[in-house]
Amino acid sequence: MLLSRLLLPLALPFLLMEAGPAPAERPVGLSYPWLAAPGAASQSLAARFPAPAGCRRAPVAAGSWGEWLRYLPLKPAGTKARLYTGALKNRQDVVAAVLDIDVGAKDLQQCADAVIRLRAEYLFSQDPNRVHFHLTTGYDFWFSDFVAGKTFRVANEQVLPAARPAEAPTHAALARYLLPTFGYAGTLSLSRELRPTPLAAVQPGDVLIHGGAPGHAVLVVDVAENPATHQRYVLLAQSYMPAQSIHLLRNVDAPKLGAWFAVPGPAEAAFDTPEWTFGYRELGRF
Image (cartoon, rainbow, N blue to C red):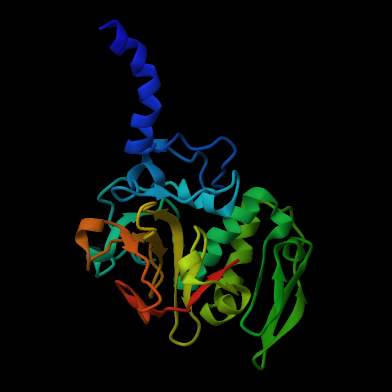
């Protein structure tokens, strides 16, 4: 009995290593600016969706885009995805969870816009002066210019500089900045902003994107890997058309994986998601 008690503290770290770490509390310093408080850690993406059996989540740097996404707050389990009108999304079968973030009252926060929204919120939480996105015409639209009184107008399909009242760089101002951004940016402009990235090297924060009309974008919000086989798995979030709740996708083709999707190998030509099929090379990184 005494020997077993002496050996137990030595064995415990190895037992924990084999079992895999439980999701930790949300790291101090992560901010989700659209919420007064980020909610219970038990309702974070990391807590609700543990890595697949035998896998470990990919390492992410403290305060990084990937870490911020990993601890996104979710609405309670069973929450249905809704359109901007309040009507239900017709395909609830593809919804694994709904992010605790508003969709707005206009048909604007669609697929690429959902990626832009989350990226803007992350940058705003770090440094509002870093928030900027290119419009489809190539115009570089900075939040810092917007609050300083500089915006744009569209005339004959040209984007021209325009003036507006200056204001403080508040979160309410960010929401006002995003409306014209959603209106004049999209999958094509976002695909040009992202650096092409090999699918085998996928990281949290990368984007599966097909630029065009129609096009689609799905955000990689987490990555896990099996250390024995090196198979990678991803969690994916999207909005769609019309504008709707940003939701975590359910793997309808492999239900045992829940919300995780196996990353296809180079021999496969495509990456199938429930509402879009992406080419093998259609992955980008901010």
